[in-house]
Length: 219
Length: 219
Image (cartoon, rainbow over all chains, first blue to last red; front, side, top):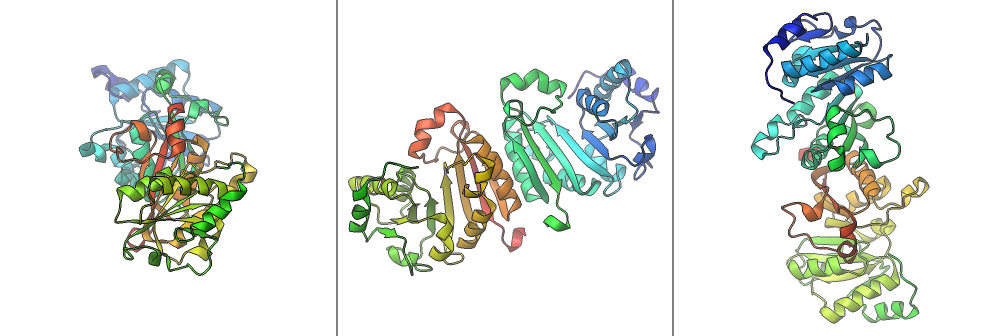
């Protein structure tokens, strides 16, 4: 999500260097050290937007460590302001960076779960490489995730979901669960909505895919 | 699809032994001999119902050989009567049998494509083994299909489609294409509707999955 650029946003992020990491170097393999519970699982949301989803996750699951990642400065600052106002959970940090930098940011197997929520659909074929479920991105996720590590992907964009079912199926992930109408299906009452999801779910179904990295036993 | 049993139906099928094979023995590996073009690809629809789909396929694609398979006598007889009335294409035969008998009916790699259309959803978990996309059925299909052979699956049942995306993805098929609203998506104008599809598509989306058997090159 883009917002008009706010020149004060970057300064504000820098003022909170204890909880906001801006294009960090040297953190690879060391993210656990940012948290009180260093043995807890580590979940990340790539492209967290204004942060409603990751903030509510962090509150609801205090025994898991969370990273909210967002590449746009102004958007990330919105999330930071919200978190500061509502109270920043101790098990949450923010990361300003781009998904293409995952290999520089995370050690192989450092993450337990990756969330992708309502990623930009990039509908034109010539922009397919920019979709966050394009095969080269899936390779980055697989490397950053533990064996058997999970990804959970939600979108309201039918064509992006169709595309992503194909790329996940064909690039080394095991399907755990598919839901083609998340808000009208029993069993998903614990779904945490993003700000976008609350606004647009009335227009049509929300799609959800849960996968995990293929391990030895499900080769 | 079940219809009330009609005792005359089986006799009528037997009267047309040149085009209707009833629980045949000894046909394994020899289906091509039933057709004029013995080198043509061989496509089958498992559970063809009243046969609209396979009949229209046979008319539209004269260079492909088709088998319409149906286990219910009375239903198959409806398809036969329709075909006789409209003219039975030379590249179509009917097979009265059950999908569990595929290993007795077809040699490994004998089929080029399998169609599953609007299969019984068997919604209760304890009946999952009866679903035609249950993993043990997928094993039968993989064996009967050539390497790189295709399956095309259509349904209007959301839960069956969600279930089937998972079983196909996790049991040795490569995804070629997913469509979550077949009747409202460009590029599927050549879709041939079943009688059920024509009747019920107004109630909600038709889902379609195209997969192929994993070969060496897509391991």
